[in-house]
Length: 315
Image (tube, rainbow, N blue to C red; front, side, top):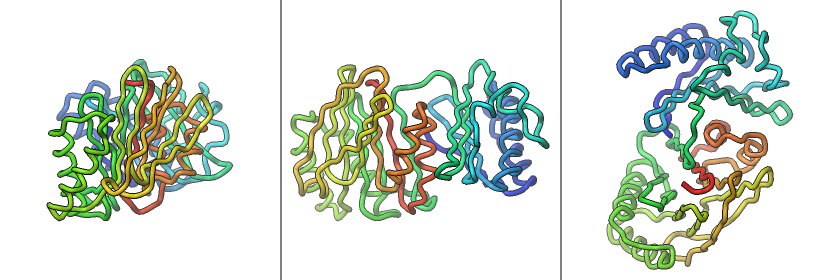
């Protein structure tokens, strides 16, 4: 999943521009649900202007599907379930209310809001079907190049964080991607992979990295890694923070962990740009991986590259 458009909403002109730009974007793609999205933009954007006074609207894409998120850092919604009831609508909106947005045949409405420990509110419209693997990334202060990386090959995924930011970090990440795609390995030989990768990075005068290699199949998940890629294991409402060995790849032997996942279990891996406490609070309240990833990115004010991966019961 990737953020393809971000709009800052501070006044009515911002909202009109957002609606027009999204309309033009979808016209080129013959998007089936364009009218629904445009109505949602106006309803959710007007709510942003009425309460927190400012916020953002994001357009996201997951393969061939599009998602719409309205985000703010205001005081939150006091009663989420009541706000979605029929007949509830704020004044000066289109009169649709969240109820109407939640009645679509193809899209589902998801809401995260916190007023006890104020972070704000995220409202997400996403397709009802879900994949079992979702990730989202955002570059350092919106630079075009990132030192974070996440790549998938077959049943293997690597998620990592090269030291620093900018073009050299990006070149290092691209080198790791190509090395990963061309390598033949298993988790049984992961330290040989890490050692040779470290050697290649040094020889090419590139930057060091921390990373995790994730092997996913129907039996569960194996995670091998070194360094500060954080891991949350969520079993029902119980959330456990798991750690890897400290250091960088190639200079420390990896930790290897096996996890059996039931139908309701999830694992989240995330770089140090994501605030652990904020993500923990989100995961305690939210069951949708898409919404969890968006909240993890949006509410983490740390100025760093940010990458978060969610895996639910294999692929």
